[in-house]
Figure 1 (cartoon, one colour):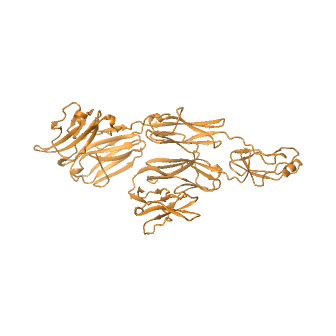
Figure 2 (spheres, rainbow, N blue to C red):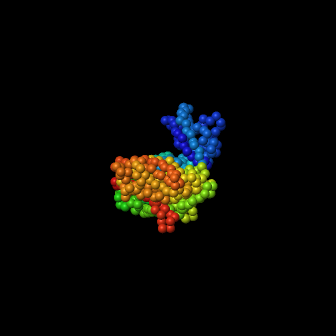
Figure 3 (cartoon, rainbow, N blue to C red):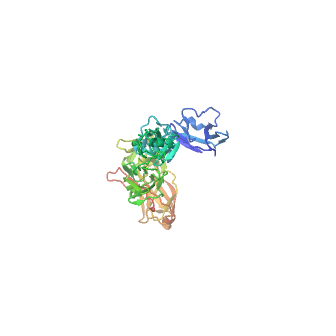
Length: 592
């Protein structure tokens, strides 16, 4: 089970090889002969058996990791398969959730951990909210390396918890619900009270009340928050002894003692049903993920439904509804039509409540703000190319040279920064250019909303030649582009041939001699399929050529593809900026 990770980041190994028996104890081991104890500060095993490695180092990739479970009572052990960790240089990235939760259940007084761990660079920040309000992390609530730790849980700790994770490249969140149940230590009374052992009134006490004597104290606790103690009721010769109204948490109770019914009775006023959606304001972009959580007070047994613009929402391709009571709504790859009013509707018996928020979606398709221009340079001359792009979420920028990806090293240096305006600026630097560095450079900006590209030719003086070209598959009825990958400068001309015939020979063919691009419009299998040859005239009596084969597929048998620009890209009147913006295709319609 290999995993890849950037150095200096954290890694979580899932719990594997657990024993099918109560209360297994988790441990870890490595297969390296060198000492590598998990008790070191960078290694942490959680209560669920997950292994976390903080501040990953290169040497962490030298070991095999495995999980061993040991049964607490029988001593039987089982061991998982090995896992390897591949460590690479960290790359700037938005947070992505490694570990989270939908819901947790606990008994009052227990310790509970709500996991929330994300991978991102720089190291992301964490913020916790409970029922839409920032959570004060002190006392019983402590933020740990792996999430949120709650000591000595109380019923009032029940509710919706949100873990927000963010760095300068983006955000992510975990939404879950915690249910804390009270430990029942005595008799359950009507209306939600619990009378502790020995606290229920006896027949003698009731009789004493009727004779005018003071009965003993009755110590009882509310199911909601505990700690309610009823003082001694004034003793009078009547059947019903009124007691003062007491408040515990959100629960109001009345006490009633009669000779006929010695137990205390606590009729509880029903708490109003209330629904609250968080976040309250949602402004996102097309293609992004939107998460909503509906927090309900006034009882835990209710029916919850989600609506969008008055229509019921059901789980589908890009819609997920999670949580014990369906309180979490998660929507991926939002399209423009997904914007509007979202409603959480709750029913319990004859009661109902609702809340709604407006989801506003903006066009976050990447846009080129500024970029490099075409130029001619001499060998050994430094070259710096720049692409300035905006978009929501922040786009990822990649570079290619004559359609081949440019990777770090090999004389090329790529760096990136985020401006105060929220734009992404990427630089490609060549310290000492060579003839092989010439060609068409393209920067492509991509996010969940769409793709935009910019390209321009950089000519390096030297003998002209043609890089080998890859065969092309075209779709019938669509346009396709073939690029002659010329390096070196100057050269006299670039010409295209098909079956020894000089192109173009019909109106659907356009040859651009300035950059060596051939455009085929409305591709037809019978006419356009075959071998194409690019011929570059280097000197009056010297030429070089390369061939490429074009295969044409029927449109009916093809899968949907997105053309991220083409060759050539038309120039603006200013002559510098060349760009094609291609939004992502809309998702297929789904039934609601």
